Image (cartoon, rainbow, N blue to C red; front, top):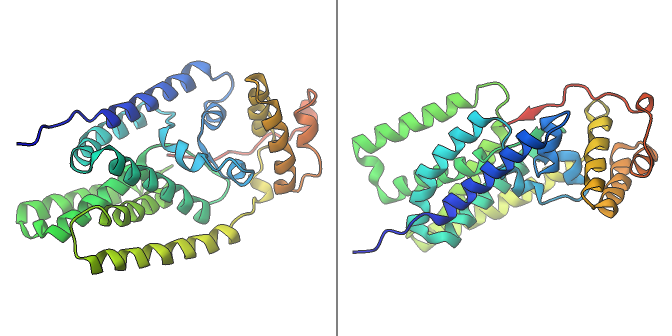
Length: 281
């Protein structure tokens, strides 16, 4: 009998999420959204400026305790099962690629939003689970099929709730399904077909990434960006903050507004107050 291993990786991920959420709660001064961005949330303009790691780290960031609780419960349930079946490395590969896939879909389909949460990765695990049920033939069992239908209906309904990043859920679901296909016992021809699908999907996403690498004027948040760059300076990342300022000036076509922001205190009169910055979870 195979010894059941403790899902260490799952608990470590959950622990990281809890620590980040606590930091956001207790360290935020004026805006929890800005603190979330500072700690790794998805923020399109900063990704365009070179902080590509946000495509992954956004999965560990939660602002709402309820959001963290729901995602944490889901991670313990489905993540633990994945870790037991595939081992730590493959499990993390599926989860992380699903998070990144969800972020890339958001990049292609939405504007300069702020997005947080592990939902893209969890949808990836769910997509892989559904694929396993189909390829193994277990869906033919009426009880299993009924459960799958209920899970799908519930998760489809969730996507109609306000503030939900539907694109991240969709991208994570597809990415997780493709990744899982490479780690399960199926015909080689099936894996080849999934590989072709993955290559085509990457090509399509690459095209849309290029087409959507712009920020509208009404989606620039100068005050928020200034505060975040200032916080980076306070934490000792002055050089990084300066290079980000240079890049943001080019992205926003603001001339040279951001560069002096990182060097001297700027009067609030020349920093437009941001409109309602959209936060999606």
